Image (cartoon, rainbow, N blue to C red):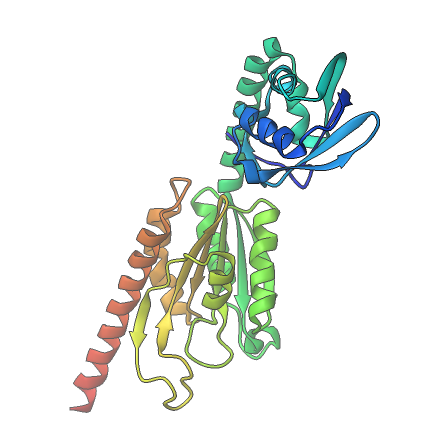
Amino acid sequence: MQLNLLEKTELRIYGLDLHEVNLTTVAAKAAKVLQLPAEQVLVVDVRDDHICLDILAKTVDMRQLIGKQGSLLDELRGIEGLKVRDDAYVDSAGIMGLISCEPLQSGEIVARTAAMSDEIERTVLRRARVYATGFEVKQGMIEDTNSPYLLALLESQGYKAEFGGILEDDVHAIAHALRDAAERGFGLVITTGGVGAEDKDFSVEAVTRVDPEAATPWIVKFQAGTGRHLKEGVRIGVGQYGLTTYVSLPGPHDEVEASAVALRRFCTAGRVDKHALANAVVEILREKLRAKQAHWHAHHH
């Protein structure tokens, strides 16, 4: 089970006597015990009463840490010039403190923490936030019909959903809102608007900033630079960051309603396959576009 270290990454080892000790060897031995690449463990400080290690990994599996104090001290005893006294111990804050657990407690703690983690994951995956985008919405020029519709849809599917507000047409602002929603424990985040080909459309670009491997299939492509089109087409974005799935939908309300078929299908079983969801939404929107084009041709010929 992966645990986020939350910036608490230091291990302080007390009760050591050092004489011309190779600190690289100390770091390597610690990395071996913690099952981390050698380059992710550094000795960052040496004092009279302790040495300090820094773990560069942002997340670790609980089993890499819990109850490893004895193994770490035993491994250090084999280093030339390093004496591990009988009163030696390892001290750390946050998640890293699991290293000092007694071996007999380890199984109980792992089981209890795993249960808590599962419950947290289930809670996060059932929380949703909806954002509108666009100056025309923000300035009250047009009514935001999408957000109330999506909130009602999500609540009918068992989500605890809330409105996140109206975002500026700015890639940095949108990306910041997406990251903030993930950090606040929302498992599904939907934006509407800003997926077009104009210079004010940044929703998909914001998703790819948070998830560079986001699924961003095209609804329609055309020649960039023609008319108002600065991009080569219109696309949607579905990305993921941790437990959070991001979905960037178009602004027209009829297209949001059409996309609801795919949202109902994919956003009910917890974790979402971003590529499958993106492809399902974009196929619906392509078919809708083809129907509009056929209707236009039928009435002009």
